[in-house]
Amino acid sequence: MEHLCLKNTIRLLQSADQIKARLSGDFASVHGLSVNEVFLLMHLEQAPLHRLSRVELAKRMHVSASTVTRMAAPMEKIGLVSRQADTRDARLAFVVLSESGLEKVKEARVTFAKQATYVFRDRWNDEDLELFSALLHRLIADAPGDLT
Image (tube, rainbow, N blue to C red; front, side, top):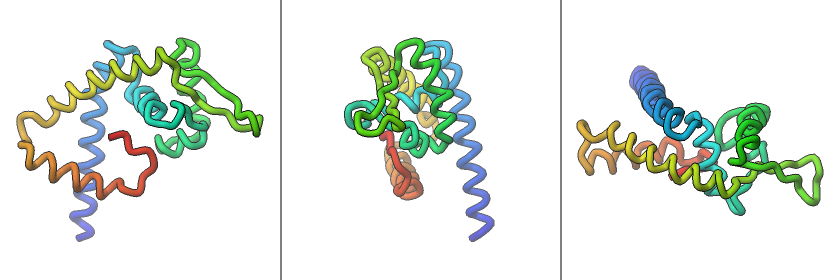
């Protein structure tokens, strides 16, 4: 069992790296964004009021709050997100998706869907994909911020 768990974990990580590398090229050339920046926008897109605290965003992205700050700064400069202070607690800041950011994430989803089809099209039928999806969901069921 331990050997299979190790083997499958390694395969999952290698698969994720391969998919991320494939997406990186398209996201950078077509949208001017990294995969992680697209994920940040997707998390904001799904959040109530299209906003999340930096801490909550960090938790959902599995990065530190300072990483979120570093990622959001250039996106703020080009108008994809803005910063909003909490009216009750000045120490708390939200990252807010702008209208332009909402359009950008919608465009990026089209690219994402196209690339996702390329990843699975030659090797998987619908039944395989349904089973795989269910198994992956079980693996991440307790993770915050499901983007599907």
